[in-house]
Amino acid sequence: MKTKTFQFTSESVSDGHPDKVADQISDAILDAYLAKDPNAKVACECLITTGQLVIAGEVTSKVHIDAIAVAREVIKEIGYTDSSIGFSESDAAYINLLHEQSPEINNSVTDGGAGDQGIMFGYACNETSELMPLPIMISHQLMEKQKEVRMRPGSMLLPDAKSQVTIRYENYLPVAIENIVLSTQHVKQISQAELTTFVINEIINPVIESYRLAGNPVIMINPSGSFTIGGPHGDTGLTGRKIIVDTYGGSCPHGGGAFSGKDPSKVDRSAAYAARYVAKHIVAAGLAERCTIQLSYAIGKAEPTSLYVNTHDTGIIDESLIEEAIKALFDLTPNGIIRTLGLKSPIYKPTAAFGHFGKAHLPWEIIDKNILEQLTALK
Image 1: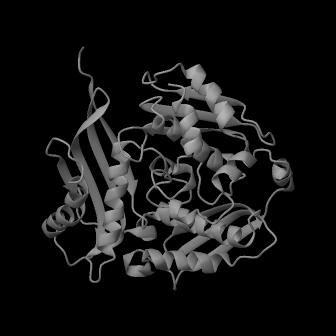
Image 2 (image 1 turned 60 degrees about the vertical axis):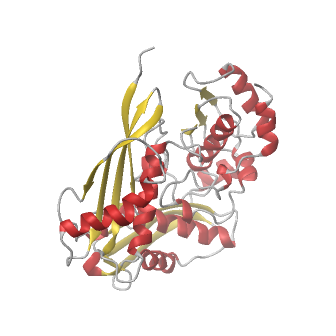
């Protein structure tokens, strides 16, 4: 049989990327509400640019949160404390436009209905121990390493950064890392040659050497040249603009809804987590090597309007049998998802950088042994 060979690329961004700053602020505000009011309904969006942060959206809650104080703490924690590197949390102007949620939307979720219509996708594959696609996992790990390195005292690196990883596949198995692009903001006192050597030795090599793949990847560090102007001064940041980075790096479809800043009554967040939870169980049970799950909902209605299962010709049983098992083993109503995954807890800020999936501590990543046994019995 002819070998099928192809390349696939995914990207990630650092916690200091302007869009991710906006995401982290939105989720930190959400967490602040949920910590005091688990039933709070929150849809919080941010826009951050040179010296300005705008917070907007809808909230229904019995508590008051100082959203600006929360935002300032997030920005300070990321490292934007000087306008010369892109933003200063102490000198910026803040505008809070949060207001009460529409009563019509609020009424639609009172009895457990979905907070909106929409389609959501979940995915899992056996390329990594996390059951995630390899390109997005390496991309995230490069950005996590960039953060670790830049937080060292006297570091020459600054918060804003992006990574991109290309993997060569043969018959859908990853066999080589072909290209790595890493752009990182840096201080002015370092040359491009010094920066390249430093980034390769301190960030890239420690990450990729743990993956025993063939090849000698082409590595590009700051391919556009100097990168000293970054953060919100270099590029305006918006909540929800990195949805492919947040999910599977393009390895499966995306329903279009963003996650950050939204409480779990919004199914474009909670049902996307549920779809990942289902797909991960299918692959973990050995029923398929790859699995895509699609769910859809109608506003105000609890039961999904559809369930789609695709094992990409890797399933060992018929997809209709997997679909029946999913309906029997998983409660995919909004309330059922919230109960199963404990989504009324303040757990969201850690999801807002380096991906929402593949992190072992998150509830939608934890395998239920009872469900796993019942799925495994189908083989």
